[in-house]
Length: 426
Image 1 (cartoon, rainbow, N blue to C red):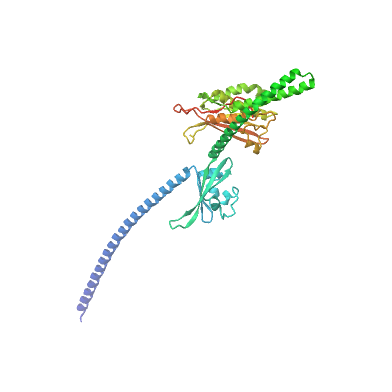
Image 2: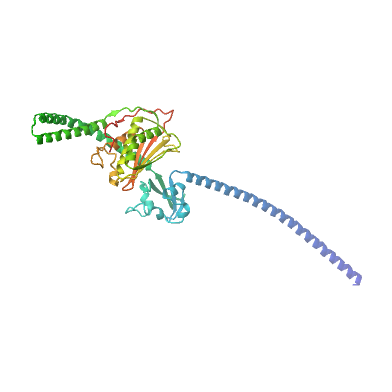
């Protein structure tokens, strides 16, 4: 084979290789183009999936925030623990009850909240068992809180934690206590009225015969004894008269009255006594003029009785405080209220006596009839209000009276009540 033929073969071989290279390059370009299209499709799918995931996350976050807002807006406390009793959730109401923040207790055992509140039942294995079903009432500072507990379960029924519900029942407890006290007063009033009528007749006879004997008696020693009998009978008759007036029902003259004016009138009347006893007076009125629907004279009797009791409790002088507060929130029945706080720095009331101060005939003073605060209670109750006392021995007493504010459209029926005439002091 000559050189020309060999050159021709090389040329053909190179041309063939070049054609194969071009074909391979074209196939590679086509594959790359297909791969690029597939990559773009995958990118679009990923973008769609990312958008969908973002929407899902946003929806879940919205639901989470919505549920969290509901939880934080509840007026009942909620505490959630995991299966081992470690706290995972605490809403704002529970924070207020326990005076802690969620950050302070999250991750800690439930005993940090309930450890000092209750002694576990013998059969209770945990606080959840202790508070389950029936609930328990515990004291949290100035609140009475009822606590319930229930297990937190999955859809399959697996217990993964505990939920504690805390409900503030302070007002309910006070209303129940007030209702029991009112029933007790009514029963004692009926009984006392019957006894008073039975005693008064023979007392009149004793006084009459003692007076007749005194006229004929010449011996001074016997006259003094008869005089003592007559005086004792009159004192007894006076107490019975007060008792009968206490148990007499009467219709109060209900009308719109300004509570500040009533308090100011009582203070003007009491001013000489306050100055004489070396007592400093502090008065703080609400910026809102509170008007209530009531009997002005009877309300004056209420505040006068309380002021005199406070003054008598401060034998060596002290501080007397009066404050009126109009509630910014409405009560359960839709009405706003005004609270009058009367405080003193007197001797205070013992824990045992505090439970009995509204009972008829109970008095801590030697010559007290024990009807004053019982009458005050009846008047306040007749006006649709409530009365509460907080006292500590040797520190003083705070007595709070809450009355519903007057409403132009509200015309409640006139309430019967036990007359306040008679002895003003407990």
